[in-house]
Length: 458
Image 1 (cartoon, rainbow, N blue to C red):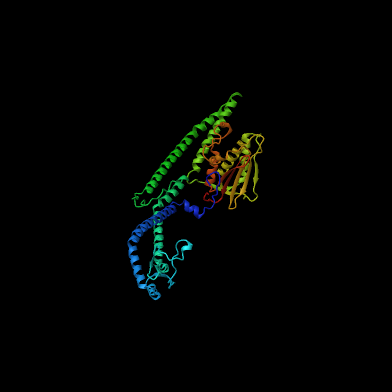
Image 2: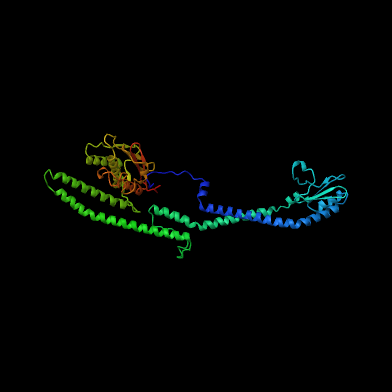
């Protein structure tokens, strides 16, 4: 974990993933648009054709129904009506004083009190015979239902699904550079500039003329520029730091050789103290640049972490004076006697964490607490908690940034330059471990995991 607080994201469901996916949304939009256009087209064309067709065919249907009525005869012959029904997909109904007969269910229209009366309507023709009978002829709905083109409907649905799958495959191929751009941006954000974003046609040397590929190439160029600026900054910082060490060493040596009376001694001590802080600052800058490289070299050796902790506590108390309350040390009984860690970097972690905790512990507050806990897979967890005022929650994420100080208005004597927690994070990452900052209420607690075996940071 490279940030200050470990965040655990909840499991994302398929609906959230579908809503997040641009491919799925484009396919759904394509499908809805196709269905809407098809529905509007069929409805419009159906109404246009059906109106004109009905007006054209209605006289022919009426004339043909009149011929069928004449064929049934007067008085109506049920045998002739049955022959017509067997020959044509129609329903024949006869109402009159002598014959009451129907070949099938007659379509019921209108209010319930009028449904018993034989009426003409859409698709139905009624004729009056000379002997007082009414003969109605209409299309048999059962025959129409049996004649529905079921296989055609299923074939249409299959073709629609095939077109949808084809559209998804095409959109998936078109948006492939977006996934590559996203992965590349995440790599660049983590400081991994070695592998650029791959675009279709890169291997052949002929990039495809595409807006997404143009965007990928622009992001690659931006990453190259950022890497060049970072390399230039690192080179400049290293050069300045190396060049400053020699004159700083000579100045400190000359100050130590000065002899004077009691009036000069305080100024000499102040000068030596300032020169020592400058020396430590340059050392921290150099160490930070070494650890921030992609291949930070660790000198793993058997390390007695509790002994290092006691040594660092004693050194800090000797520097700050006996009036400073020593931090309390709690050691896990399961912690191994020695661990394969970089002792120099572990000492750096302990010194920065304890120095930061002592600096922010107010007078009268309990001393800082140092806990050493064994990791299940081998290694140690170092946790330092102070009882100071803490920091606002929104500033926790910035504590591991170089030269970041929560209170920019405080005096130089009340705080460091903002490299302590930055170096702690780099040491944790170099060991393949994690680090976490949380509000202890009161105070701040910093937890650093240093595994023995190199792991991928999470």
